[in-house]
Length: 459
Ligand SMILES: *Cc1c(COP(=O)(O)O)cnc(C)c1O
Ligand code: SF4
Image 1: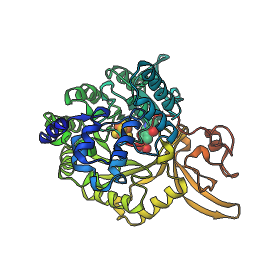
Image 2: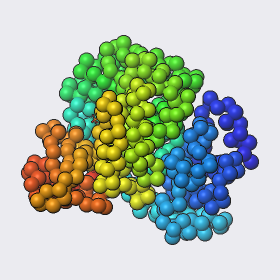
Image 3: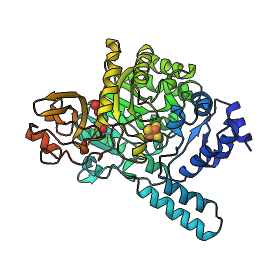
Image 4: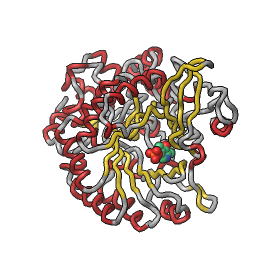
C-alpha cells in the first residue's frame, strides 16, 4: 500500500506531490491515528490538501499529532468544518450508488460555498486596464507596485490549510488571476512609469520550471522604469530543493544573477509560518544560495491560531531569519475565508503577540511590521492599544493605501476583545474624514475588509 510513498522518500530530491488519494498511504506510513486520518479524509473532500515528501519527512513532527504546528499547517483538521457537515460527508462517502455520489458532490459544493471562497470579490477594483480592456493576471492597487500572476505558477509545493486562495486549488479558478505571458504587463508598464516594482505571485511562481520563470521575468529587464522584481514564494519552506538540488536549481540562481546584472533589484518574499521551516540544512542552504546571487530575502507570514499564535515562536523565527541574512518584513492578520473561525486570532491578541515578540528582537530584526490587515483601502497595521478619556482604543496606521495621500496616516478604532478584522471595528469619532471615507464613506463603518488579492497574506 505505502510503496508509493516509500519510493518517493528514497529519491528525496525529486519532487512528488501527495493529495487526498494518498491519505491511506500517509496514515499507514506515519501512524496517523484512525480518527485523525478519517478527519483528514473527509475534510479534504472540501478543502485543498497537498503535501510532499520533504514536508512529511522533515517538517511534520509525527510524535505531536494532532497539535503539531506543521501538521496543522498542511493537513485539514477536525474543527475546520462543522460537525454536522463532517457527519453528512461521512455518511455519503460510505455509499457507492450513483445517487449518493451525486449527493456527495452537491454537498461538497454547498459546504465550499458556505466558506466565503472568494474574499477577493471586488478585486475588479484593482484590475489594470489598457485602452479600456482588463488585463488578466495583474493587479494594481498601490501606485508603485503591480502584482503579476503567471499562468503556470498557480499551484504550490504544498498547500497551507489557511490559504485565502484555497478555492482555486479545488478547481474554482478565477481566470483574472493568471497571465499566459508578460506581453500585457510590458504594455502596462510602458504606460505606467510610476510602477517601479513588480511582485510576481500565485499560487507559487517557484512551482514553475526555470525556463518558464525566465520567460516571464527576462522581458521585464528591459523596462527602464522598473527597479525591483519580487517573487512571493513558500518554496524555501515547502521545497528548498528548488534552489539546491532540483535539476534546474542552478539555472534559477543564474536567472537571479541576470536580474541583478541587468541593474535590477530582485527580492524573494519568502513565506515562513514557523521556525521549524528554517531548521533544516537544506532550507538554510537554499537561503544562502539565493543570497549569493545578490537577491534579497524578505520574510512574511500570517498569524494563525494552532500554527504560530505565540510570541516566542515569532521571536525565534525572526531572530533565525536575521541570522540567516533574511529580513523580517510582515506579520499578516489572516483573512476571512475558508476555515477562518479555526484560524482567526483576535486583533487584541495579535497586537499583544506582535509586541511581545518585537520587544525581544535585536534592532536589525525590527524591520518587521504588524499585525497588518490587507483591506480594501490599504494595508492597516495595528500599532497598539491605548486608554483615553474616550475609552480604550486601537491605534491603527495605513502602511499602504490605494490613495497615496493616506500612506503613513495614523487613526483609531474602538477597542474590541473579539474583533478579528477591520470590518468588525468601529472607527473612533475623531477619525479624519478622508480616512473614514476610504473605509466606505463614514466614520463608524470601516467597511468590507477582504476585497483584494494582496501581496500575500503569505508568500
Ligand atoms: C501588500 C501588497 C503590495 C506590496 O506592498 P508593500 O508594502 O510594498 O510590500 C502590493 N500590492 C498589493 C495589492 C498588496 O496587497
Ligand atoms: S498560502 Fe501561499 S503557499 Fe500556502 S497554499 Fe496559499 S498560495 Fe500556496
